[in-house]
Length: 156
Ligand SMILES: [Zn+2]
Image (cartoon, rainbow, N blue to C red; front, top):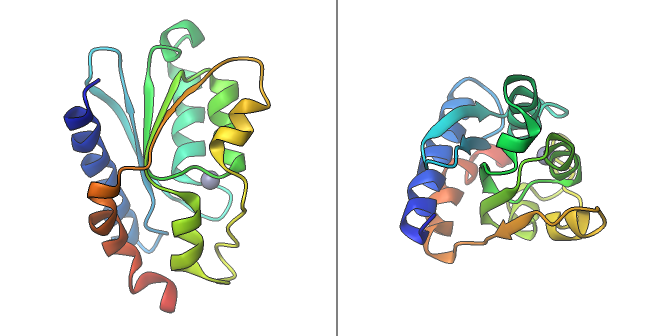
């Protein structure tokens, strides 16, 4: 997958994040990309324990064989939390592409009670496992764009 393809998928995930916000959910979005670079699934955040990346990893595990998912990429607007990285690990999705670092979510959400961001990077979570999941991110050139749906959201 080229960097331009990754940026296109990050924009698709951002579209999902904006739709989630329009439906009253937190503005996070994820897409699952197959080995042929086509988007297989889209998922927005549902609630505090049903994050976009956890939901899409569970749906993917139910729909596809682990050998296939190892060749797939989960693309997320923001770096997945420990719960999401863990679910992705167990679903056997082989690669993660994310737009903004977890520290940027913390800066945006502050001490908002609905998003008590953890400081545990996905690379640390995957690094504690027994298989090597590739992680690509952040993408500074798209950061401002991905921040937009969050700017006013967490001030409520
Ligand atoms: Zn999460």
